[in-house]
Amino acid sequence: MIRTCIAFVALAVLVQSAFGQEPEKETEKDWRDHIIPVKARSFDYQTVPKGATPVHQFVLRNPFQEPIHIVAVTSSCTCTAIDFDEEKSVLKTYEDVVIAVKLQGDRFDGLRNSTITVSLDKPNRTEIHLNVRGEIRNDLNISPTFLDFGNVELGQGRTRSLIVTYTGSNAAWRLVEVQCENKFIRAEITAEPARVGVKTFRVNVTLDKEAPNGPINTHLMLVSNDALNRREIPISIRATVGTVVTVRPPAVSLGVLPAGERSSAKEAVLSGTQPFRITKVASDNPAIEVTSRNPPDVQSRMHMVSIVYKNPTTGEGAPEDGVMRAVIRVTTDVPGLLPTFYVTATVQER
Image (cartoon, rainbow, N blue to C red):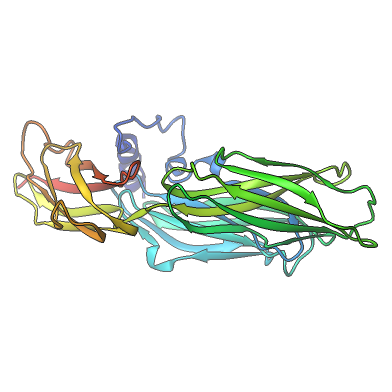
């Protein structure tokens, strides 16, 4: 075990990001912080209206040469439900996995706290703890509980509405402000006709036609004048503007290669929400040959990219300490659409 720990610490010290940044020294930073930083391990849902089931996604990523194996993901409270793809329990270099945690506001009330425990047995046996909290309020109802603009054509924009209903005892309660960190989303509040014991507000939310190509995952913050309870109510917002491309796998492993031996070709598949054309494919490692299988004048929702490593023993592109890492950047005919993925290989002396 001592030899294993020493070997892993040595490995972790050598870890670099895909952009060549040196990691912090292991005396200053726990190796688990490279998988998910401490500041990203906690999330506050804040005020949650009754019936809402907000979801927060924790992302774990393997920056190491050695694989990570997730044995189990468990929750300390039934007020949270976990969505974890067990088929991704083994993470290779540069692969990541999402652990989605849903606060079940349709089944519980009041202030809720939950600890999500992620158990690993590789590269070392350990646990990573993720924490969530939120206050589920019976006197608030919001419909819908989150806004999904869906697929929006570039330059078009779209408007959606929320209905906020308050049934509490504060006769002066009202929404006073809407905040959003995304400059391409704006909102306005309109008070609906009041009923006895019920206050209703309509919030019209607009996605600006100037919104750039790509996915939007953000939130609105509805702010009330309630001085006794939490004043801020977060609302999740999703949208896909124009064309969005996913790459599978996001990290291509060329496996273990004898020194100087050219690799066999491996492929990455680029899938778009709309047809697109690849105009250029480039690697930051000159020993990588990367080509698009589709002709350059063809628009398609799916493209295949072939990767080969020439594996020189010296000079540009030669592996460092037996490991080759490369970043592949793809240029398309869609402004701002620049998919990126990673390539790794382990090189051994003959």
